[in-house]
Image 1 (tube, one colour):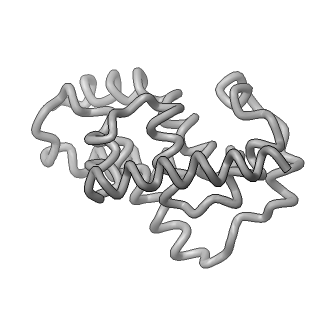
Image 2 (cartoon, helix red, strand yellow):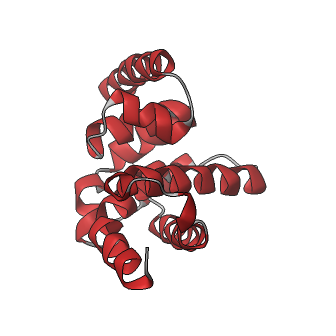
Length: 158
């Protein structure tokens, strides 16, 4: 794949990737942008590992998710719930998630449940694709979706 094709693919998938990461980071748009940038650099450097161009979006999401996990491990700190409650949307891509209650509820979910919920409901991936992105089996993803929905239902109803 040449550089122009890569840039075109990243441009096409930039906003969905940013929305996913912004929600995964509980509304921290600056952190989401940093992770997206790192993920795009990693993707460009390992473009030869992409076997099917039509799976570029899920491949890029997998790299972004792993980059998110790496950053979380490096920081070793939990999301600040008070900060998540007070975050205001900074752009049109953040408008879908500008509701502070949702950010606060997402911040309380375990990371694996949050990722499964976001990839399934926001990004529209099938369970099989989510399993590939987060490197888990399909039954684990189904269980995470079920638990995540229940946790969100409880958190948002209180």
